[in-house]
Image: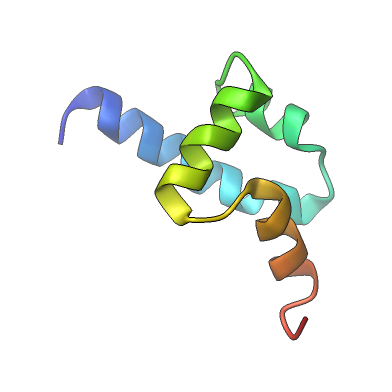
Length: 64
């Protein structure tokens, strides 16, 4: 694994916990090191198969 791959993976897993705190996606993106929310959303979707917003809904209402 290259350093950029490791860094992206680390940022994503850190971001997985943050939306559960009720933070907006833009705030999560910036706190995890992305320069824009759209770049964060794109990488998140490619990595996990769903958007950060849908992840927040899944963690908030797992039965849903």
